[in-house]
Image 1: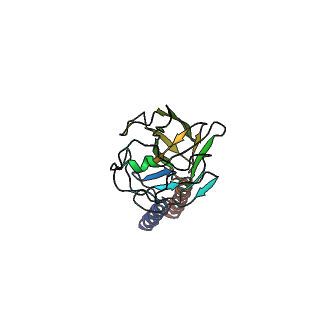
Image 2: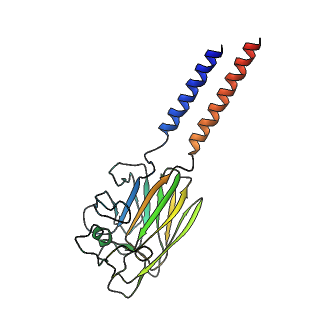
Image 3: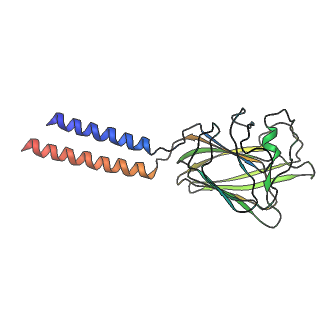
Length: 243
């Protein structure tokens, strides 16, 4: 009977691991979701940024009305279940960069979107696997004005971070705290919301999955059910053996 109980427990353990693996989604630590705003070149950019400064896929958002884009791609080209809904009232294209055209980062800063002095904007993600993420945002100011700025709040049920950038658009290299900034957030329910304040400019976003720190609710339920079943079989086996 003891051998049979071990076989049942081993089966349940393997079954639970298989279920958890099947629910893990597309994302793994290290995956990067690239978002480029505005611009007029093809949808899949192959430009650099603060991370993964090499050939990679970028998802391009170009509409100024409320828009939803499904099945975003990771930087390596893999499709995902991640969606984005956004509304940035103005600036659906144009040039806002001093970067040399030979630079990988030139394409990132070619397009931009933003808000005017009347309306806020937003970019909301859904379907992100739970875990910890580094969020990079990019804002190279327009050379036609003295100073451009970005004020944006990034929130999840577990995080609230403020992104703030300001520059004159004349930098020709990436400068942390001037034309890009990174903060870390925790995603617990698949959502990450970006609220863009009035008079803000934004070129691009990178969302890098760095660790699986929050288990998905479905996995927790599976583990709980598995634990109850194992306990029940142990009790049943113990009663039979004692009898």
